[in-house]
Amino acid sequence: PHDKQTQEKIRLVKPCRLLSPLPVVQISERPLVHQESLPKLPVPPLQQTCVRYLASLEPLISEEEMTHTHKLMDEFLRPGGVGERLQKSLERRARKTENWLTDWWMQSSYLDSRMPVAMYTSPGVVLPKMHLQDRQGQMRFAAKLIAGVLDFKSMIDSDTLPVEYLGGKPLCMDQYYQVLSSCRIPGPKRDTVVNYAIGKTPPTHITVVHNFQFFVLDVYNSDGSPLTVDQLYVQLEKIWNSSLQTNKEPVGILTSNHRNTWGKAYNNLIKDKTNKESVRSIQKSIFTVCLDAPKPRVSDEMYFNKVAAQMLHGGGSRWNSGNRWFDKTLQFIIGEDGSCGLTYEHAPAEGPPIVFLVDHVVDYMKRSEMVRTPMIPLSMPQKLRFNITPEIKKDIEKAKQNMNIMVHDLDVRVLNFTHYGRKFPKSHKMSPDAFIQMALQLAYYRMYQTCCPTYESTSLRMFKLGRTEAVRSTTTESLQFTKAMDDPSKHVQKAALLEKAIKVHRKHTHMAIHGQGIERHMLGLKMIAIEDLTSLPEIFMDTSFAVASHFNLYTSQVGSKTDCVMCLGPMVPDGYGICYNPMDDHINFAVTAFNSCEETNATKLSQFLEDSLLDMKTLLEQVSKTQ
Image (cartoon, rainbow, N blue to C red; front, side, top):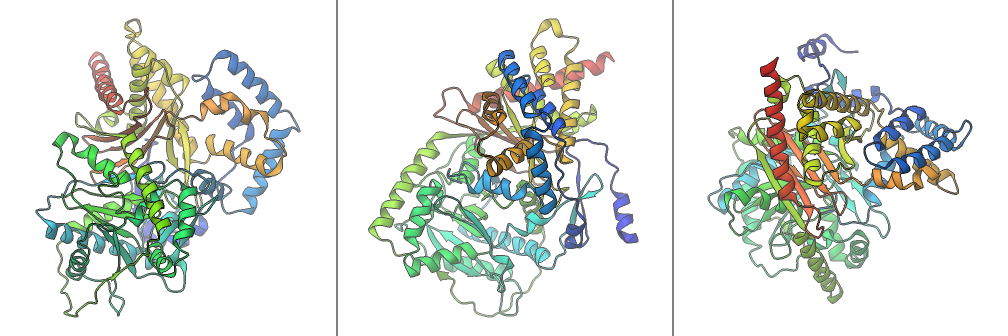
């Protein structure tokens, strides 16, 4: 049902061979018309998932365990048995809902989790360093950034956001509508996310926080037009000048706490009417801007590590961790020293919509401004007041201590790999993403002489309300390649084994994107079992199931036009969090690990990763020479 113009536009898009991940193409059409025609997320065939699940265990568990798991699987798949019953229930749920997975995923992965959102689930994004001479530069930059986000918001409000396509198929655009004017709200046992953009009177203000003090900044004139960059600059100056005292209680640090602790403190905080109104203003705001105090100077090579940490957690209670509201979906962070980026609360959306927004804002900020500013005096932005009782002060002190422990525990390493970028694997007809995943496998194997469960998130946005699926990057083929790489007797087979491992990874990614992954299907069967059965089937109680879901490598590719670095914390205490952004001629990596774990070391893994990428390049070049 495309008009002629659209068909022309689609034709201009290069036909895709499945070089995963495919280029995502934007086409200007009305997104909401598309939402209706998107297919529903399928439930994969039970047999297919179970066979693939067993195959994914092969490289990870002993033969003994494997024999045991096979027995349990035979029992689970018995004709007329529990597996079939769960599958039928899941298929029923799929018919009755818009997406059988989305609510479960949001609950089980985010809202039920009681870990702090800072560092454990909220990613940080580091933008290229701005050369700000002084705080006027910081204000000017912040004003432009706000204008850029409002420009993006105008596309959402007028429903003119270009639809994204992947391999000729439209993607679900729903997440774009969830990131502005939304906030996570703590509960005693489970959190919720509220989107205020849907109400009768959508919010017209943002929150600005400086020196731990929050302000409401109205970003629209009375006629509905957004404030110009000059007007925003004037307002930010006012905020800055009226928040110079640095002895304020950092109320925002409460949001970094363990969710149950924060849930209790939250109920305590909003008993007071003034506090409740202040909290509501923050929750309802379109987004938050954090004007951070400068950090101690560090060497150029340490700069990105420090800034990545600042985006994840603010650097501790002495620095900027109190200058946040971690429950807010979107917080832009601008330091006086030119460091800038953002952090986002992960429950409502994945990386791609955030990165698209970042690319849009960065582009917008490059344009020169020609808007004449109307000479209307603007009223003073309202400062949000908090009444701090001794009990709340105690909660704040506890949150500070916890945050400082967390900050000391997280090691963050940014690796700017400059020897080549995604053009190199492409020139050898290899998927850059699969190539990088194999380099990660090799680095890990060299460091530990064994492989581990590896999680790579991939998108389900081809389906209505689709979120993510996981690709398990560790395969029998990847293990064969990593073992051969340093084995002199396998010199001849190495390149062929690499190619084979990459092919398998591509196939798994392709299946995942098309709703045929194993991870979420297994989750669905387990969730149905929890709802329908009195006891959980043996297959989910099996040690193999626990082992295979303990992802020591938690990885994510976040492709962006902007030369940015995304980072996230590890998924397990003895694991790594690895994000990468492959640019044409270089690759940005961020590697995180916990210092409290003796076995992990982010710096060491980064070095192994750099060596692995170089060795894989040498390998392919040698092969090309001999051909």
